[in-house]
Amino acid sequence: MTSLKDLFLDFPLPYVASALPDLPVSGLAIDNRQVSPGFIFIARVGASSDGHAFIPDAIRRGALAVVGQQEISSLEVPYIRVDDSRRAVTHLAAAFYGHPAKKLTVIGVTGTDGKTTTCNLLYQIMLAAGLKTGMISTVNAVIGDEVLDTGFHVTTPDAHDVQRYLARMLAAGLTHVILETTSHGLSQYRVDAAQYDLAVVTNITHEHFDEHGTFENYRASKGRLFELLAVTVEKPQGNPRLGVLNLDDPKSYDYLRDITQTAQVCYGLTPQADFYADQIRYSPQGLTFDIRGKDFSVPVRSHLVGAYNVSNCLAAFTAAVAGLDIDPAIAARGIANLPGIPGRMEIIDLGQPFTAIVDFAHTPNALKVALQTARQMTTGRVIAVFGSAGLRDREKRRMMAETATELANLSILTAEDPRTESLDGILAEMAAGAQSRGGQEGRTFHRVRDRGEAIQLALQLARPGDLVIACGKGHEQSMCFGQTEYPWDDRTAMRAALSDELGLTGGPAMPYLPTRADADPA
Image 1 (cartoon, helix red, strand yellow):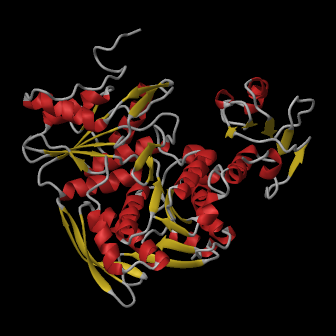
Image 2: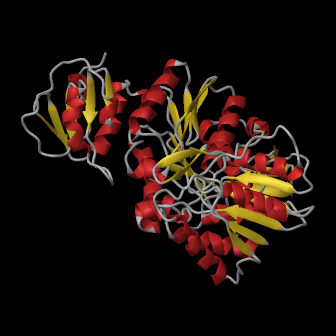
């Protein structure tokens, strides 16, 4: 068992300690309620609370030491003061779990859209190549045959959870891990001890301005993944330290090219890229295209749909072939092995005379490409159901409504995690965006507060040959109103609404939300 003294032997940040006795440490906690005897409590300063206020409770629960960033004296347990508690968590967790990333090949995937899809494509490629691979995504952690939920909403797990998953992967005999890496995870230092060997970017577009303030700050947070390549330690198995860039994404390519201090390679849709796609053919059943490199060309078939997934396939293929030396033919086979991603352009078919799809698109760019793909999949009308989250980037509300007004025939604006914001206020901002592009309420767009009723309306309005697409929730399993997470799955809601519309028996019940017409007003 690791001791308190051992945790700070190679600690890379400055600290001041009242004492560092050789006491056994049984765990780490950033939430005082999760402290057990023998734990170290790390007090962090958050947006709505300050962990230092909970130090007395953590000690009552058995904390043997406390780490924080405030001047505190006269604690009954050792207190270690650091400049930034968030950064400290990452390195303490790595030390507690024995620095597992130093013994694994770690591939980080970041970007605004397409991260989860690219991770899953790369995972299938690596399995096809016979590599013992795990994956930590914003959806789950995959360790062999075990799949662990990583939370309700989309962000990289906390630093101590990342290190715990890595340690479990190492103990399970895995040699490689794919780590989906968000801007929040990077800006909050959760992955600073991940020891990345490969860094992959999909794209960088408008998102998370509520957290980062400006596009430049947001891009810089993504760029930290590529900067971390330079501090990765030498590993017994070798480490390529390769950056994989998207030549087609002007908002990220030049910036990342200039800050990446290690080897780099690019992918794209033109021959100027090191790896590029050619002879692209689209269909509702999937994609076929060729991937060409300096001395090879391989045919690729994917069950995924949409032009944007060509880019995701290229990102995964480039990382595998250029970074892991996987044979191009094996990489192509891995891409073909992926049947689809839950909640990503997922078709819900109960025999209705139109197409119904659930997709995760929750950013302006993702909604744009989802609707462009929907347009390719039908000769009828495109009916889009979507919302915009509360307590998040407000500018997205206008932008997404503008995009849908331009690309869909009919938009239904509805709830998507309003949290403690006024849902009516969010919908008003979205309606103003639609109207700014010529949208007419009651004709080209509707406001429906309850998401289930919005989906039902979309299906009622659909004619044979149309396409209904519900965007923004995808695979997610809850929706937040106030501070309460209500169980919610868009796919279940779509099946429930279709069952009612078609008069089918045995279908699922529509999940409950407090906006429903029959909701208890209390």
